Image (cartoon, rainbow, N blue to C red; front, top):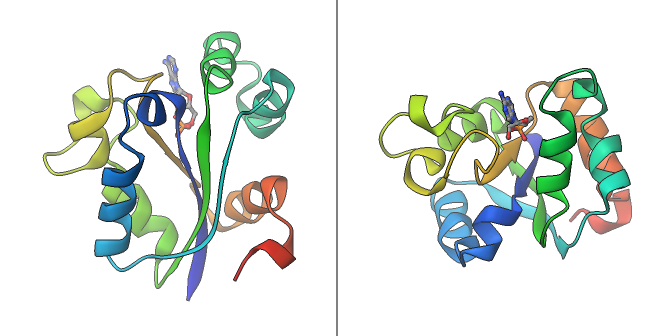
Length: 137
Ligand code: CMP
């Protein structure tokens, strides 16, 4: 079993797509082992996306991530990291395959509805950034 970290981003929550996206997650065999609906501060978003701090889109992207409530998740499944990335689709919804969450829900590369960890180390960092061990069951 593997765990990954996911976010339902402000654009998805704001448009009432939380339920539809959670339904896809569960129907694809992921167990939701932690879940929290919250509003990120700009500083929290900046700390979370620290690896991107030199990118030109960093100020705008972290403002967007702190513009409204998000749903933070830890997902568990065999191959959870790769399988969640597959279910999300490409970062830019214009490049996302049919049937993926970003193809069906995302508005653009910044308002792209969902986030997922890209590797084992990032998943560990991202889960621990928002959840303590006692919140994951
Ligand atoms: P995410 O998977 O959360 O990881 C970093 C985020 O930065 C990414 O999704 C996008 O929402 C955002 N991002 C990546 N590239 C760009 C870009 N060129 N312009 C705006 N936002 C971007």
